[in-house]
Image 1 (cartoon, rainbow over the protein chains, first blue to last red):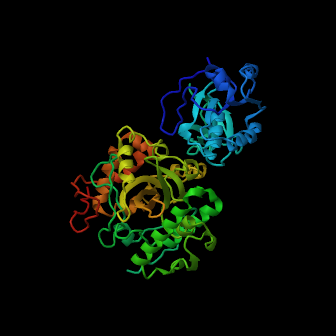
Image 2: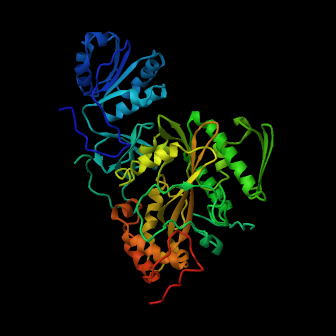
Image 3: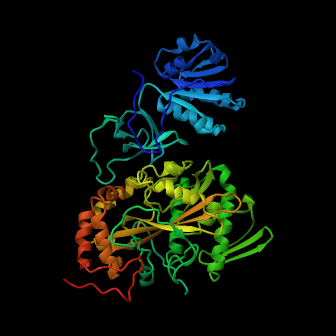
Length: 198
Length: 356
């Protein structure tokens, strides 16, 4: 299964939806990995005729299936970071009424949402659907470095090396959850890492 | 009265102390012998002479040293002061509010001379005498919010109002109770309060938001909030928690009276005229247990509140591990006598501690 039921959480934690085709002439899809399946679920020839899909496979093999939908524009990027200039250009060229659809991991959806918001689209107007990995994009509150694809709690900051615990507090602006030193009050006492949802 | 500004530190050697004057005007946050969250708002229209409620922006003996500490924090981490691009006008609104209020409330310390949009600001305690053009950012050394909040005690959140919500879109935050402006910037009222336990379920934030959305110009509001801090450390930031967190483990039965501080926030709320933003100053006052318990009513009450606080709140406020030691210390100041209602010290009427 590529879908996951997230447990109830605090009010800053994003709640992901299910993509639905909305009326309109222009549609921008950004997806990574298993997010392709959410696009496949809503695609119709009419919708695809006005669609631009930016897809980052990250090891998944759905690119051909997406290409076969014959969207007006299709781009397969080797990484999310490499796709950002194209995404920014697509948002810069956006016409009134553009519909934005994000699917896949929280990290990629969150970063693409921040780009769309920076381009002037309200976050409440952006559709999302989580698929695939439940790993988190984490910001270290101490050094500000981002660690991608964090699966365990606690984890080691990829930048400063501190052992951080994984909070549910989430910043849309940073597209990241907050990581805080786990042994700040008892240096060296770091619990055994466990899966975030274990 | 003329304020004698203290030369003191809020870090390293911690030379911060409260004078007798500061202790007796401390904003003790408990109006009864127990505590639970509430929307404890009231109008901010002055208060008893000499109290922290009297002026719109209270200036006390710690002013100069607090501003020096703020400058140190900002030099180390400029992200503690941020303003999203649409918030500059609100920054000017805030600058005007503070300059007008302080020059009217403390004419011996602050002066504002206005000739059209040519303004001259004199801040005697900090030795500042600047002339600038109101609403022209290029005539100040910092943005307007940063300029004035480097000269005003307390943290400042400047909240944009739209979509029936408040948005944390600008702020100066260097004396915070463990929350990050850099992380929370851009969040709405419910999102930045998300980590607070219980209060969401109690409907506290829905009611507080309704109240705040309706605050009008010239009718500011206020409330008190509190937590606990070991050592008089103003900058209890998450950014530096990996450094200061360990200080919580340095309490001993011998030093707890001097080291353990009650940390009280006087939160006020002002509508800003041009931007319709809301400014939310959060002024931090610190007082050691040793000093607090010299007021017999507060000693009795603090013991009862700390003893009876629900464990979730003691955990959220970060002192659950130290609570037993706190109670051992505080119990010697609770002789079981009743306490008078309200937060004031009632020095003339409350009986002294009956020694057991």
